[in-house]
Length: 324
View (spheres, helix red, strand yellow):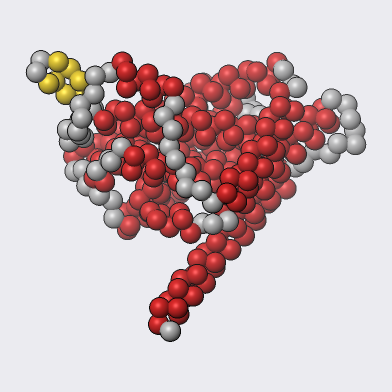
């Protein structure tokens, strides 16, 4: 799909406008998000993604539109799973709840910038080295396996500081406590950063690690960098409010990892089959985008509904045991 430069500028400018507006609201009145507010803003971001997908369908055709929706659903689902780690980071750095929205928003913007660079590099590499599709496919199959393996271990996740975060701690003089929502502050004539900056770096760089599976996954659905970037951007932008909407409910999505492992395994097989087909192996089929979208939507719907049913059954059993 040939995308004119003005369209890239329009999408990026629109995302920046939303971020600036969001930050302006946060700075003007920092407070803890209510469930109702979070639900409203999650629906707003989801509606914007749907409108963009519909517009893309009318402008470029059904297949690019379907590729966007398949990529968006996949990236959003993977991002929901990653919220577990974001909760751990927030607890690890003891971020006051009234400032968590700002931390998440800035951290996600940093992640989007880094993902943009990652997408550009990935698109250029895939255009020149077709064998990378085999690597991506094998990596997604391995990631699908590790999702099930780690889920079955039933161990509590821990946050381990990455290299960039440890470097930031060494280089930047940091205050012991938060100073409101400020990122930097002057102490005894010396400019210092607050833990607010450190936790933003933690969110952003940790999300970049998550991109190691999500970016190959979406490249398995579309080779178009514009669709890859747009799907990632819309998926990431709704995470802030989703963090407050779901809260402890994430623990109830017990089958989400299984659903994601099925999706990643399917995309991995799809990548390998298409790479074989393009290499001249006529027996290897090309998987149409409508089938990919159907598999993704059905798998995630089934695992989500199954998780909700199990959570309700566990609650009923717990209530019955207390009353007996």
